[in-house]
Length: 246
Image (tube, helix red, strand yellow):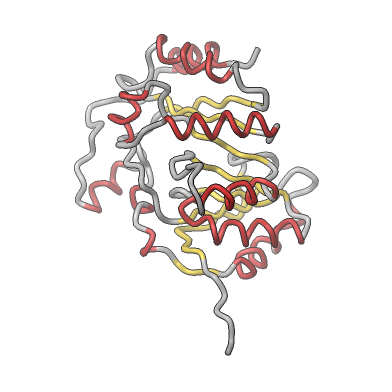
């Protein structure tokens, strides 16, 4: 009997990504996300069943067409949605990528992370094949994080601590949203947390933008941040100054 190859559900592909990890990268956006971030610019990735199915080999064959552009720093980045919701497929993809000597980056919010089985063992295995993790920390305050995303942040912060203990390279990303997480008190608390981690190579402040609002309208979902403008350049600089690595 023929074995059925595992498939991942893909929202979209980007051949020449320049902001999702080092160098030029082939970016794979997987579908599915349990978070409901008020500022999400890709609500069309929430539903996993809307994705296009691919095997790991199919995706890597596509990616490798652009390998000559990667030079020594580039590779593949898997983003979403939330890629950890498809951890079995992700593990297969990254294992095969390392067999092909491809640099692997995971862009995650950490939302599915748990120390419960069977997820935890799969996570520990996945980390072995992951060169870099881009960790999106949405809000440092537990209650405000629930308001902003609909989910807790306790497991996310625990994942960050474990990655620090492992010495796995991490870039922290923080979307700066006026009237939500752009308060100096929150930024200083986030900075204090980041400074407890031993593995953070970079902190990126990403200004909130409204470019995805039309997707909410297309999907018939009420946009929760109506009337909130992107942060000023001054507030972005302020956040970068507070969150910069010492």
